[in-house]
Image (cartoon, rainbow, N blue to C red; front, top):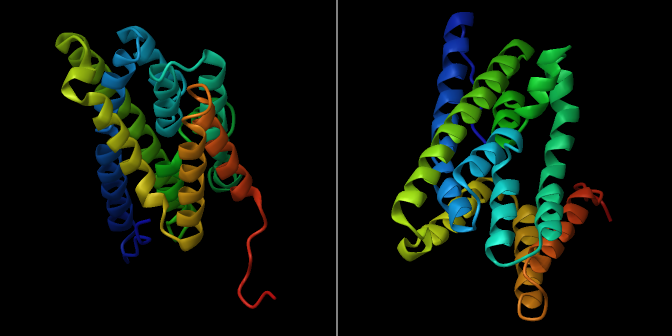
Length: 234
């Protein structure tokens, strides 16, 4: 996570947060190209792909959903896996709601753009006003960039024919890992990630497509809900 922005002049602090937000938005939004291509490779149409980004708008959940479909899994396992991965956004909302204190339609919009990036930039700021700036600029910036690049990726995938011939399905997996990697900043997070991957690898040869990812996601969610061990605890 980036360090909080601390400057003396209020306008300078605001501009620094906006720059930070836009840099995060651009970097994250570019992964939408891989998602759009993978979604088309999985059998979704361009407009189904675009609708998925507009309405679901959660990179990890979207990659998981089309990944399960591409592997031959059922729609039920695809939706279940995507939903499990999206649970974290609801937990983010509890914290973000206190920062934003949004009401009416703003609250609905805030819920839709509450993602890893907007939450991280928002809570990293040293004062409430800057937290709101960081959240909104990051959330809306990622939303616009992600949806534009999703459309581009879907068009590229259609123009190429079968995107899997060019390795775009592998590129999408790499993009998913790139989205995940910055979250593994602690030893505990790395242990959970390795454990979830091990579960998926062990189940893959013996279960239907989608089940390994669903089981790994469930294990990661359960691990995230367990009480944390504090320093000095016996």
